[in-house]
Image 1 (cartoon, rainbow, N blue to C red):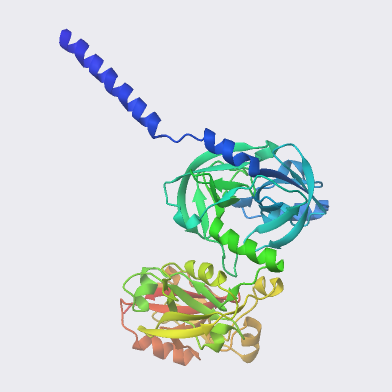
Image 2 (image 1 turned 90 degrees about the vertical axis):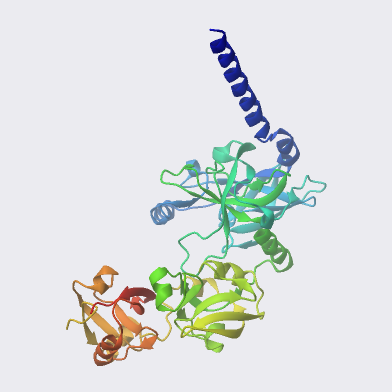
Length: 459
C-alpha cells in the first residue's frame, strides 16, 4: 500500500516537472508585442470596382492561393489591409495588391490618427508597395534579416484580420524558399512558409522574429475556404528591402532577365541527361532577342550554377536572377550533352508587363512505333499555326511508353535525346537507334508551350 502511494506521488511530481519544463520552453510574446505593435498600421484603400469586374476577378482567382483582401466590402468601396512604418519620417511598407487601383489611401496609426498616404512606388512581381505619410518622429519597426531565419523558429504576425486592428498571432517557420504556382513567367519571390494564422486583412502586415525584428511581410495564404488553413506565406525582408531601395530611388524596380523558360527534373529526366540525381533548371525555351539567345544557350541545357550559387531546384534560378541588376555579367555552369560547361551571360532587363504576361512568346521550336504513337509530318501552314519551325505531329496515342507519360494527340515532338526531329522518317530512325529500358528525354510543344518528359522505350 505504501509502495502504491509513493508511486503515485512520484508520478505526480514527474508530471508537474514536465509541465513546468514545457511552460518554460514556450516563448513569451508580451514584451515583443508592446515593443513592436506601435509601428504596425491599418491601411484602407478606396477603389472604384465595377460589379462586373469584381465578379470576373472572383471567378479567375486561383482556388488555393489567395491574397488577403477584406472580402466583406466588395463589390464596391474600400479594401482593408495592413502595413508597417519602416522609418520615422513616414515611409510605410505594404503589399502591392492592397493599394493597387486605389483612388485614395488612408493609414490608421496605433495612436488612432488617420492620415492620407501617397504612393512612392509599387512592384507587382514582388507584391510590394512603398507609401509615404506626412508626419515625423513615428515609431519605426526594427528591420531584420530573413537569411538568418531557420525552419522551426518562432515567428509572430501583427495585423488587422477582418478589420480587427492590431491582432497578434504566432507560429513557426514551416519552410523557406517556397515558389508558388500561377506565374508562367517565373516566380521572383522565395516565400517564407509559416503556420501563423493569417486571414483577410493581414495583407502587408509584418512577420517578426523573437528579437522583435521584421523578417517578412505577410502576402498570401493557401486555402480552400477563403480563411486560414495552416499555411501562410511571407515575402522575405531581404528581398523586400532591395525592392524598397529601388522604389525610393527610382519609383520602380529593375530586374535582371536571362530569357529562358525552365522546368524541374525528375529522376528519369535526370538520368536521360546524364545526371546522377534531379538537380538544376532544365531550359525548355529560349526567348527571342534575349540574353540567353545572345549567349548561345540551347534548349536542353541544364543550369546548375550561377556565379557560384548552386541551382538545386529550378525555382532557385528566377529568385537569383531577379535580384541582380540589369547589365550584370554572370557565369552559368550548365550541363550540355552530358558535359559540364561554363557560359558567360550579360543579363538584360525584364520586359514590360505586356511581354511578361504573353503566353504566346515561343522560341524556334519545332503508324505505330516503339513509343506507341502515330505521327505525321507538319506542313508549312501547320508549323505557322502551331508556332513551331520543326517537328512531327502526334495524331494518335496507343498503349505504350508515350501514353504512360501522358503524351497527347496534337502534341508536336521537336527533340529526342537532344536531337532535332525534322520529319516522320527522321523520327522513326532516331527511335530505332535508341536503347531499350534507358530513360530518354523527349521535348514537345503543347498549346504553344514547350515541355520535357522522360520515358523508357520498349524493345
